[in-house]
Length: 141
Image (tube, rainbow, N blue to C red; front, side, top):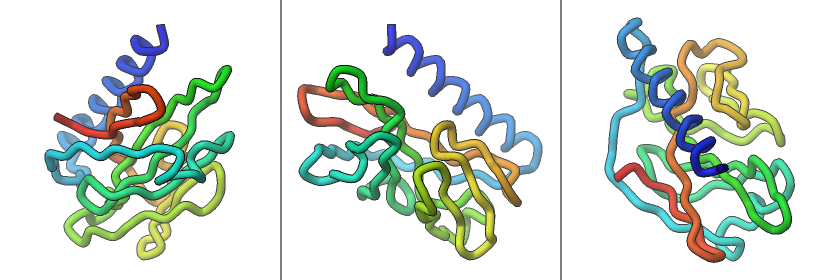
């Protein structure tokens, strides 16, 4: 059931990114990658509402812990490349447990769904997170 929900959530994020592109919004470039993380490599992401940085994507990635039910973690990942002037490849930074910020433009986004809070028009670029045992993979291929 949660796989279907995550697929629907990812599809909505993808549609938002396409919609922004058609509306003249700047978008983060596509790159092909697969990046694996675990509690040993991204320990802060395994806390409730936790997030951590890992490599991959255009400017690095942020993984965010959506929930932990009975030891089963659910994550979403975003590219750290700010969708505000993405050609500059400015990295967004984790401000607190609920949002990230582009220190150059001052734009802010919610971690839970990547939606813009301030300045930005487009959401953060999301990536699918899959699990295999205690290991998680972020990728787009």
